[in-house]
Image 1 (cartoon, rainbow, N blue to C red):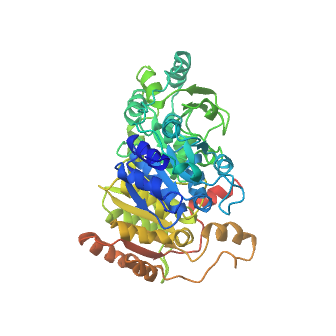
Image 2 (cartoon, helix red, strand yellow; image 1 turned 90 degrees about the vertical axis):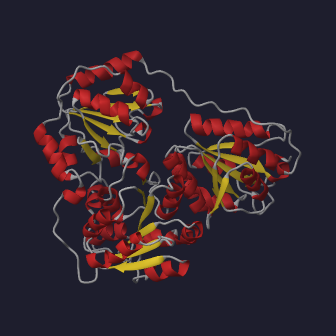
Image 3 (tube, rainbow, N blue to C red; image 1 turned 60 degrees about the horizontal axis):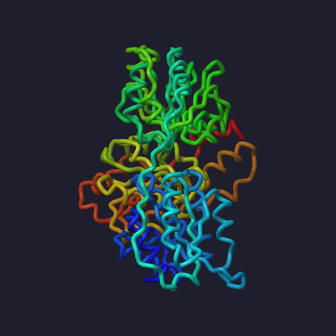
Length: 538
């Protein structure tokens, strides 16, 4: 057994069931060893896509994400996806082949690259310690919720390695929350008359505990964008807090006298640059990471601990809080964006994205997993397309890069093969990541790819256009994305009006043996509501 064999086999033994990547000479043997150990290898068309697939797979499945890349250029190609994963604290291991001679054309400082974007850099330093290095990388990824780049030097990979299975990495058991902090949180909740709980990424495993506590104290429930779907079906759910929030959610969250962020950063996006937090509101933050408390805004109380453990430990007397029959009726009637009336702005040759999104929500099966790219359009699928739970929405936007949405949906689709995958893209991000359409076709994924096509970089058009700036750099000729989709092997539709979506119904009723690409020509006259709100913070 060589070092490459030992590393791949050990990673498979430690739970790597899927590995995403692009294979070159430097990672050929270690990738084959992973496959021999039982992992499924998913070949991407670009390392950036592979990195995002691994990230999305980990987020949606709750399992370890694994990426395999070539030395030097393989890693640099993947860096945007790795940065997104690192900023999102995704448990992921990146196997990166590495040259150690600075005279090699493949040489870059791979450890520095990793740390520069917030990932952890590790290295296999000897044949005898190779398996231990894998165990250390997996432990850091899973226990610390970090993205770990494990560099595998080429000159070590062919050396003989000791036989033997790796020591198992036990499940992480978070420390018990501090009793004094829990009592202080309970006292704050007991004083509140209009409490709101905002759950984030760190609360996705704690729905039952949060709903139970909220029911006792009368709290309303909301999520950050990345936790969208966590409270689906709860009559007191306000949906997403922040820029994507409905008018009713804005009213109720800003009217709260207590806001508790559960595993939620309470950053500018979730709080609308702070405007959603009323001046008299008590603000509490609960997080496993002490460094996260108050990182984005000052808080009145910070509690270190696992969200599930803290919520279960809080004891308060029953109170009606924010919950009244009248409010329940308002939430039922206007609690979703699709229930908020709008003035139709569809044109002869372009469809209002609100009309498009509401109709998609009607037609697509409820059991869906939605991946969303970045851009002016992104609030529409995020706000209008209902998802069944927190595993039904994947939002790779910590780095705010466009071009990740298609790869995101591939990773999420492989994690949830029981659901219809829906990729929501802008034309800018869609064209940036379009190589992965071949991956969708090759894998036989029954995916619906919806491109909100405004023939430009919409965010920049709406940001700079009102100032009278020339927009030649951000506007493009209309692209026939449906024709491009057919070239990759997709079924494709061009949608300019509601009736054009009849083709979606036909596809859904058929065998779904090819992906469906919808080139939706959307109106270009205005910025989306969330973007208008975001501009106020710039």
